[in-house]
Image (cartoon, rainbow, N blue to C red; front, side, top):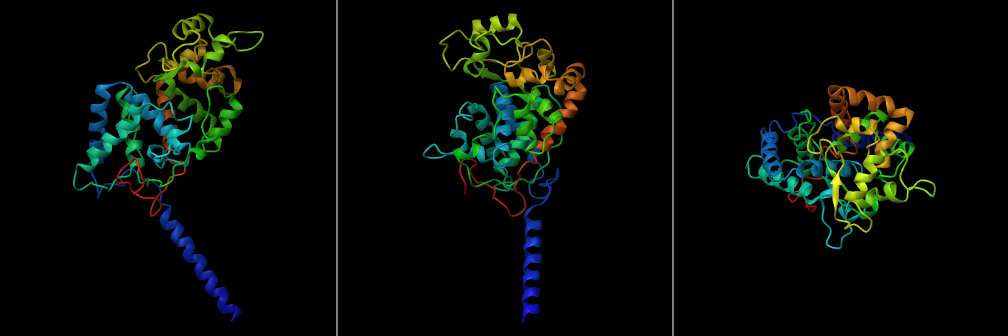
Length: 328
């Protein structure tokens, strides 16, 4: 009997292993070739229309993808709405996510589902990944192939965001820890930070750097002094917290390598930006990306592709949401 029981246990373990393998399938570019072959064109068209309405579409969608993938993985849980404000998007770290990013995904989802062959076949997580590629490209950045096959998560909690997103005041050790915990290298960290070449921030996120950095220095010494005074003009004391300024003061509406040139001049808006240049561990990478836009673009493609694999649900895990804002 003992031998028989061992065989049953062994067969059970083999069955569990087989099931887990079937549920965790690798992402692949041609995932929808049979079920929705024109998914990329459908998403691209909707995103381009939204982009023509407002440039905010680009940084908002890109930031939405980051915030989704770094919390619970790339499962579109950031899109879920909660009737009692207890979802990821309700966390203080996500409150500032611009509505245009959410709207971009909703419109792209509607475009995909308008095709009878594609209706309810493409996940919101994959639509967000495709839309992110498209806004980067529409803003002047590189075009890259997107791996597909993600499923949508069913869970979105405000608690899961805690300590999972980097903050503007983080040092390099803290930033590196965030990224390595998600399988991303320091080079990936620098490349993905280059997304700050487009987009904006609210004054409160960096006001300490220009008004009360330390008892000895009111202004952060790593900040370009002329730039600091410009920031003070745009963000006076007691400024309306809704006021936003460009992350890149030179080419704010172009996805390029200007961000890294700004860091070389002490014009990184956040402490977490400028530290990439002041810390010797990442300074050479900043200099490389500042001097060669093609190298930066390739590094960004590599990094955002790796980010898109973080914590994904595939196979029979998760679901394909009919409505991106709520579980089925």
